[in-house]
Image 1 (spheres, rainbow, N blue to C red):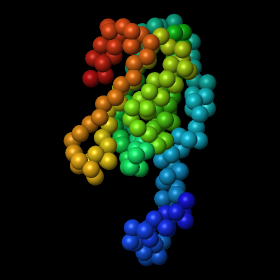
Image 2 (spheres, rainbow, N blue to C red):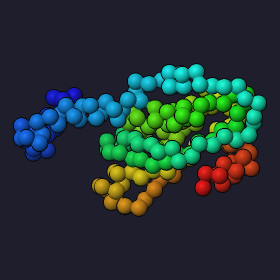
Image 3 (tube, helix red, strand yellow):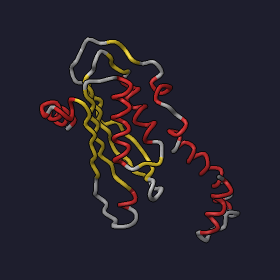
Amino acid sequence: MQELIHELLVKIGENPEREGLIKTPERVERSWKFLTRGYTQDLNTVVNGALFEAESDDMVIVKDIEFFSMCEHHLLPFFGRCHVGYIPNGKIIGVSKVARIVDMFARRLQVQERLTREISSALEEILGAHGVGVVMEARHLCMQMRGVEKQNSVMTTSSMLGSFRRELATRNEFTRLIR
C-alpha cells in the first residue's frame, strides 16, 4: 500500500521526498487499515457471547451512536449518528455490542443505504428479535467538499424489520423516541 500512496503523491504533482511527505505513505497505510478494520471482523467475534436471557419484550433503544465510514464511490468520509431499536424475543445484547456492530459495518467501504440494512440484519440474526429498527443520519463529504458542495445536507436512511415494519404503532414509537 505504501508504494501506491507514494505513486499517488507523484501523480497529483507532489514530491514524496519532501520533509512533510516522507512518512506519509506509512501513515496513510496505518490510517486505511484502521478505517477499514471492519473487513477483518465478524459478527460472532464482535458480540463475543454478550447475549443474555430476558423476559422483557419492551423496546430497547440505543440512540446517537456516532459512526464514521468511507464512501465507496469517492473514498471520502461520511459520518453521523445511528439509532438502533429492537424488541427482544427472549434475548438482549450488551449495550456496547450494539455500538461495536455499527462500527464493524461502518469501517468498510460503504453506501449509507447498505450500511443501515447490514446493521439491522445483523441484529435480527444475532438476537432473533421480534423486530429491529435502524435510522442513520449522516453528512457526506463527497456532497460537501466536491460535486454540488451542499454544506448543510444530511442524508437519513432507515431499515425496519419484523414488527418495526409490520406494525405502525411500533415504528411510530421508535421514531418518536429517537427524536
